[in-house]
Image 1 (cartoon, one colour):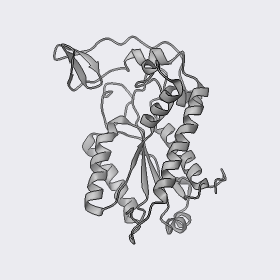
Image 2 (cartoon, helix red, strand yellow):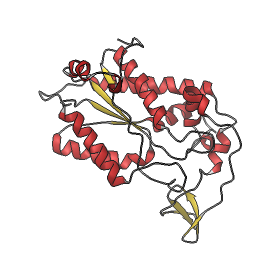
Image 3 (spheres, one colour):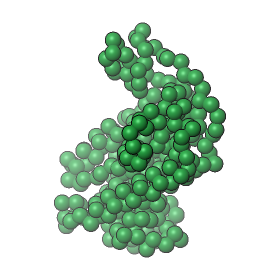
Image 4 (cartoon, one colour):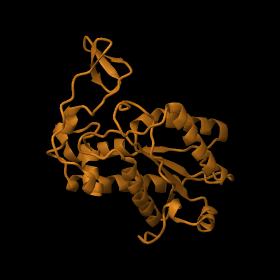
Length: 274
């Protein structure tokens, strides 16, 4: 079942071939990502990393006895902080919500209710929650979302131990080592450019979407024209393909175990989790 020659991506299968597999209501993974500034070292398209991991998760889960397939990855995430960066492509929250809702409705309309979202973009999180909560209320179907980079950070932090916090952030870990391991040819060496301390409302920007007001983090609309330097600068000399490979294996194992758990839950007569 885990033969590497087996097709796991719907995009590689004929409709007739998948129709036979779909009769058993297999698990379908829907990977999501983004195409935006990921700092001076990483390519913009982290959706390609999400899609690659999704295929390996499907292979691992299928090898454990739960047939799993991968839907095409949605490469555009919710626009958040890097709209000023040339080359970025993103969707408004309303557009992303509509696209995600319609993709999920298409799968559900074909009787495929065992769907796991593999999310690879932080800006997607609140909209995914809105869409899946609405589906639960209207269809009584529970669709979980596995946030790839959040789980990868937890796994990498556990491996590195205390004192590693400064290495984590946008454009830094865990994506830096993961990309070195899985798409290393696209990692760009060099120095992280200096990033000026932007001000909004006459206050210094203290983080993504926040400004500092006498030590208090106040939410404010913030956009960056490049990724802040601190985390990328700390991560670059310490990141490695070896660390990324170890984290990738742990991430794939954890995700596959979740998929197997989800795929084996009791179902109602309509095929939904009960």
